Image 1 (cartoon, rainbow, N blue to C red):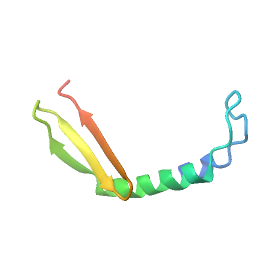
Image 2 (cartoon, helix red, strand yellow):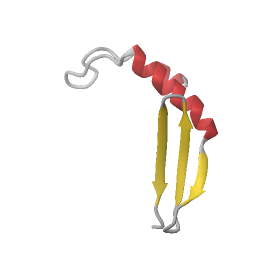
Image 3 (cartoon, rainbow, N blue to C red):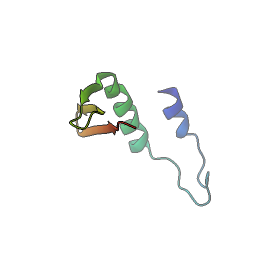
Image 4 (tube, helix red, strand yellow):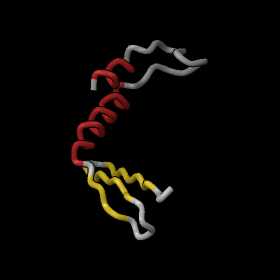
Length: 67
C-alpha cells in the first residue's frame, strides 16, 4: 500500500507531459490491492488457471494459460 501512496508524490510532468496521479486513482488502486486478499483461483476448461477477484465496483480476472 505504501508504494501506491508514494505515487501521489510524483510531480506533474514525471514522464514527458504526464499529469500528477489523481487522488481518486490512488484510492481506487488501494481498494483493489486490499481486495486482492480475496483472490480466488479457478480452473479453466483448457487446462489453465484463472485468478479472480469480484469486489465492490470492480471485477478482475487474469487467465494463466498452459504455456
